[in-house]
Image (cartoon, rainbow, N blue to C red; front, side, top):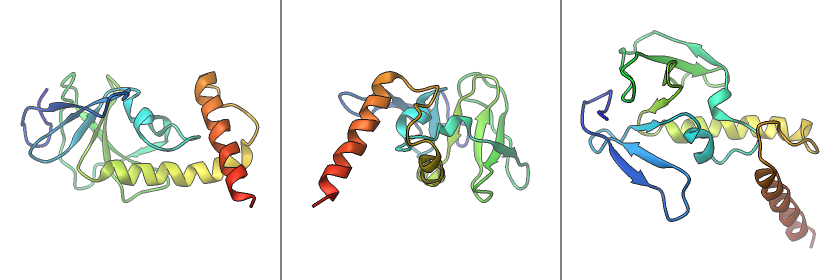
Length: 150
């Protein structure tokens, strides 16, 4: 696959021994391609699925890029809670192209939404979560409560 920004060949990077994501990164501009499902597995948010955030389409000042996977046009969009952040998404294969530094920004948006959602969802397991993910979350929350009650 080629970088939609600078046309360099993307390099696949494994994120560790137990990683569930192999990231496609441009060696020149440090942009990253996320196939459908990879972005949610990589960010640290618990309640928020980054890929299902509401994105507002924006065309102001952005160049049209082509999807490195399927060559359809990438659509620039901004999360509703972060209008200054513009990420590119392929509506055909549902992948995301993030320029260098955008992963941290979109993760910050997701973590902010997590804080809001955690208050209303303390007991319910999100529908799109596996039981294992829910169990890991509950265990980590219980561990934090135990260590903070001294």
